[in-house]
Image 1: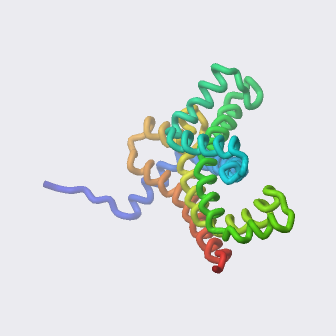
Image 2: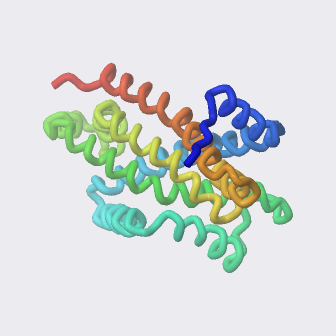
Image 3: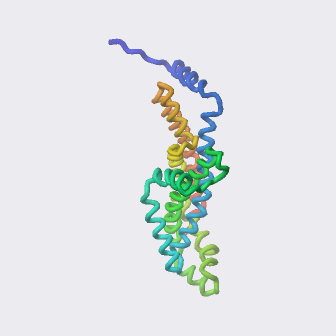
Amino acid sequence: MSATYVTHPEAREIVFDFLSDYDDPSLLGAFWVTVQLTVFSAIGSLVWGTLLAAMRVSPVPLMRGFGTAYVNIVRNIPLTVIIVFTSLGLADIFGVTMGAPDDFELQGFRLAVLGLVAYTAAFVCEALRSGINTVPVGQAEAARALGLSFTQVLSLVVLPQAFRSVIGPLANVLIALTKNTTVAAAIGVGEAALLMKEMIENEAQTVLIGAIFAFGFVVLTLPTGLFLGWLSKRLAVKR
C-alpha cells in the first residue's frame, strides 16, 4: 500500500488557494459581525444583569421575586429557543420591529442582540450577586446608618467592590457570550457560524474550514480572557 504525504509548503498552498476564493470581505466581515454581536450584547447584558442583581438583593419583595423568577427561568431555557422566539415570536407573531421593516438584515441583528442580552444577563446577575455577597454586611449597615438610601448604598458602596471581585467570572461570561453568538445563525444573521455553514456546503475542505473558524474564535476569546484575568488580579479586593 502506498501513502501520499502533503508537505508543509503544499499544505500552505492549499490553505492560501482555499482562502483566495474568499478574499472578499465575507470572511472578515462575518467575524466583524460576531465582534459587533459580542460588544453590543455584552453592554446590554451588563446593564440588564446589574439591574437584575439589584432586584435580587432589593428589600422590596416584588422586585426580589421578579429577579429570582427571571434568572431561574431564563438561564434554564436553551439559547436557541430564546433567539428563535425573538425572531418568530416577537417579530413575526407580535409584529415587534427593531428597525426598518424592509431591512431584514439589521432587524435580525438587533433581534439577535436582544435574545443574547436576555439570556446572558441572567448569568451576569448571578456573577454580580456572588460578588455582592463578598462585601461585608457591616459596610452596608454603616452606610445606612449614615442616612444613605438603598440605591445609594448599592451604587456607592456595594457594587464597586462587587465588580472588582467578579471580573474573573464576568470574563468567563463574556467568553461564553462570544461563542454563543454562533446561535444567531439560526435566524439568518450573517456572522461567522452562518458563513462556516455555507462554506461547508459549497466546499470539500470541511476540516480546513472548521480549523479556520476555530482559530478565528480563539483569536477573539483568548486575548480577552488573558486581559481580564490580569485585570482581575490587579483589581482584586485585598481582605
